[in-house]
Length: 558
Image (cartoon, rainbow, N blue to C red; front, top):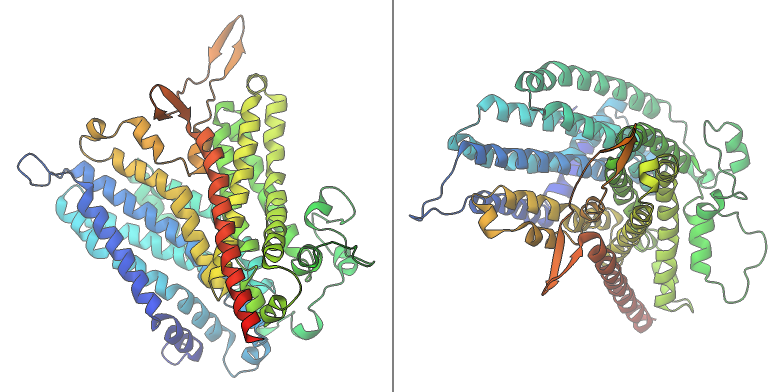
């Protein structure tokens, strides 16, 4: 099943022998080494002063960083394992081979997670260095790696299960992230609690049995779909009869003629296109995304709404000052879903062998790129703003939030700017790369650098010895102006609630400001709303230049 597995051998030869694998691993280890070296400032005698508390903080940074890497990269590697075969029209050939379904599953899973596990194990020497510094136990390091490996296997199997249920990689990837995100948050909460007894019990006694049970259930489901595939004959099922599909739809039913469904799923065109219309935009909106029915959209909407209900109750009604945390959930949803619709805009044309035909049309490169951007931005923005209904409900019902209604406008502007950024970054890498998988990985890495890395960098600098003397809160806030999460947290939520004849203050939080010179200080959210559209325009300009260069090359060839 492993040593004589042709699926595994083929995937490993393609993945692990590429020069990019060695370069990425080298950069990953180099970044971790720099983190270890620069984390401790030099003492007066030039020696580096290290305390057990600093080693513990560094260990937490390593674990959380690698866990985020597993949660984000496992679906990227595994969600296209089976849908890729369907898109390349090799799915039936794979099922017709003498390989057993379990052999195919093991080959796809190990090939998808092998490189990710190699990256995780590359940090083991640095973890041992933290142990040598004191303040840690070998059992804690072993428990952390056990959690990481169990999480990688669970997230990979969930992604492969989604890949077996859908016909396109984008659909499987979106649903995988929606399922994995709450599980990842729950796992971090249970395994990083301050109570050592609870942490050990959850990591050793609870998590492994539940992961093994989940693996068994997912293995049965995937093997059954591979043994009795319900989606054979892909040549005749490229276009789904939506009227027939809706008869058996469970839950949400999408009606293209009603609002807001027609915003992200406009009705199919039955007449001629009017003069001056952009055919690429019309094709992307009406046929490209929804050519295989609306199953993916219905699953995405139902899962995201289901997750938003407990968050709405906990973050808006019980503690209304926690509204920025619900906005962070909406931003995370867009950061995961937005690139799926934009990072394949141009690369999928190349993979379907239609890029040359598109380049030789009478449309200018700018019109093509703008149409691709608007199509991806429209779908991701509408799906994201569906989650703001709970935010509107909270501001409408909660008295203390209605007194600060202007913060709702700021939150909505931050969400809209984030939607623009995610679509622009995905479009840029789709124009620069040759494969959708590569463009998607680079898109997520860029978004992590812009959105998440500044927050982690601030946390990192705050842990340096004597940070208060060299880094002020305003200087740290300047580093986070590109992060929408930091912008949402910087919105002042000083709210109050009537309690009899008096007023009981819920929270008094002074958000950090950024100095612009002199005595002028601007909040982080204001700088983000100014800087983010500028960065998005730069990303779109790079995409236009890359596509124009390909258009120029196509013209010279013709």
